[in-house]
Image (cartoon, rainbow, N blue to C red; front, side, top):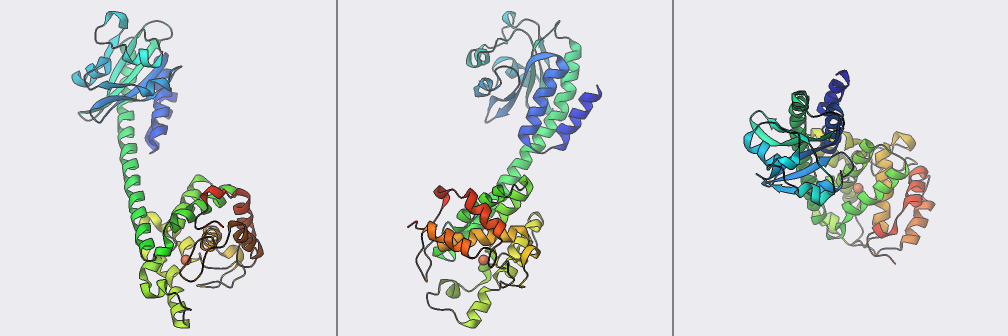
Length: 354
Ligand SMILES: [Fe+2]
């Protein structure tokens, strides 16, 4: 039983929807001594097999039932568990899942997945390996289902929030690009380039996420720079340069009020620094520059070189790579330049490739 509690704790401690389901399937199979398990959730008014274990775990996920169809439909409708010792003798059983997946169901036990009184789906264990399903299987599966339902609900909410957050991020990135037509697609390409470097450096998933968000937001401070300066085709005056140079600090300030973006602020603030200390805003050098900022610097420069700008046309990918190599150790961190060149995938290159 202690194994069960440990696994329940794991289910409750993660917000990863797929992890919750995978863990649930493994547990449901194990605690009931079954050949397979499945989670069937109410989605868009029907019952969808969202997770399964056993030999046909992939095939079964293609199955959708009507809201009142089959054993799952009965459990949802009656809000009670169901034990069927022999499915061939029970009219509530539909063969649809078996005929689609190629699985052969003989016996099953199904319990509702519910949050307080709301049913969100059904948890099933199928084909007891030895002996027959009993009341104790219903009991243990119900304990599991109660915890799992809350975890599934939380993970879904989290995924929705994350989606909302990412679409907000995209809207802001679009707003930045709208200020300067030459920046069109810039944040997306920089993100691709920066991710190539991040992967090349073997960063963790968490660090990769930071790099991705920093790439999207790195120029958010340009919202606070006069459009006329951003779009100017002629040479900029000293005071105009000074104005542009404020964009990293402005960006850091804009994002400082968003708790979820706290970790990306150093990357935003220092993305215009040079490895040799000749950049701005503070002129810091080498590893004093946060790694995320060093990564963005390479990605940003490469995209700038391979895209047309108001004051010049793009150079070829080959020439841009040569330029990165030339400035490796002065403007750029050599480790980041190498990671970029080693992992560069041309299909992601933006701008005009000549
Ligand atoms: Fe910038």
